[in-house]
Amino acid sequence: MREAPRSSRVSPSMSDLLIRALVVGGGAAAAVAIGLLARRRRSSKQPPVRVEGLALEAAVVAFTSTDCSNCKEVMRRLSRLSVPVREVAYELEPALFEAAGVEAVPLVVIVTPEGARSQQFGGLVELSRLRRALSRAGW
Image (cartoon, rainbow, N blue to C red; front, side, top):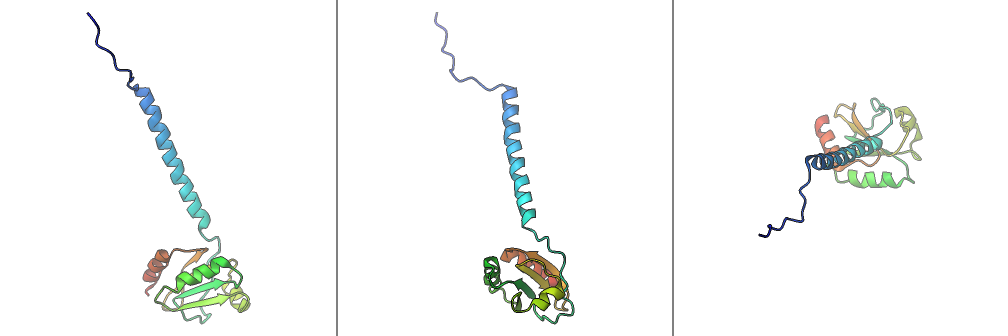
């Protein structure tokens, strides 16, 4: 009598499955950690600026420089908002930079209707984050 042919495929052992699961899980954890670190690096290291008493009269104040490409992109994004936006360019108004304590550009400051700083963003900021911040500030 002839034996039935065995399958050429070997089923993985439990330890093989565990190793595969650990590798996949470790890769996913590493990807999440890298994403969080990248997000943290994008956040502004700029200390909170002082806009109270500067009579800027806007919902959004953007501190920029005339030769900064990121500043130009930020201003393009801000033009899509339906609130007053005030651009303060370093080359044109250095005294306002000093009075506010601005150290880096672009820096976007959300101001409450009463004129106090609500939130600030350094670098290129997404329009959706700006809209949420404006809503929280009362605009």
